[in-house]
Image (cartoon, rainbow, N blue to C red; front, top):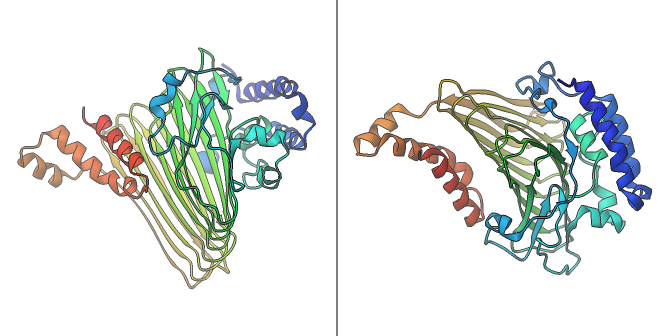
Length: 437
């Protein structure tokens, strides 16, 4: 079995081949960032359960494999058409194995300065917006998976909404993996930027076309300009042999609003780090999540909301439903800095255990250094309410249907906050299929 050091050396050696494949891109300014990142990657260590932020998440199964950096492959429209919501077919960006597919995507011609594109196109064209924001929020100096992503940055989704512009229909971004029998590494790098008073909704999905073993390592950077609104929905639905590690970094300017909805159903091991920062007063941040786990799945959410400025509001609600021998982790931290007076922060994590073998580790945290604030947090772990089950069964409802009703009720306050009706309906159907056995 390969050691963590062997795996590191594998990726370092793979970088040499990756670098030679860049051709003219290797002479562009961002390539210096890639080289700096691979150097930092060589100095960092893969996390173990001895590291505080990873003590409940053992990634040893991930380190069994020498994943090959993915290459471009083709897919047919009939393979992906069922993954495209009807909400909007004007703006659909499709990526296969982390590479943009022009043939499968549909983008309304850019107007009024709005840009929906692949990151690689923008890098090649020397985009000023990309140069100003890419790599500025997801620092790679201390996180090995971010360093790996940065070193191999090639493609991903780029969304730019300039000042005073509104994109009425949601943007759909599909990241689809087709392994072709290989253990591949797919590393989408996404950048979403809004100007002043801009609005956009983004639906980001991760899916598999087969049951192969692969690793998705994704980094998404989001910049919310002054008084802008960003709704971001992430659906992780990869196969149960996949590994998924993602990091979302959000910087918010004065009066901006960021609403996150994260749903995780797939993957053998999946982890999402989501961090938001208030750079000025009047910002609002809402982080919502739901994970459904079966078998021996492991899902880990780590969040950080940084109240660095006064008069900002944050609301966080994550829920987990765990069955069989699955394992869930929630670690949510809210920091209220010394000058962040008039902060209003609420954090909640609730979990339902459906079997004796399932396990949840939850750790909500508040670090408050200001004195004029309203902050609360809490966590619960329990089973389905026995009295409620008895009541439903006494009304002639079978045990499985009663169980499904209670699970749906438990999850509904996360799902119902979504503004897009079709996505909301789809998630409700996922619940029904998962728990109506």
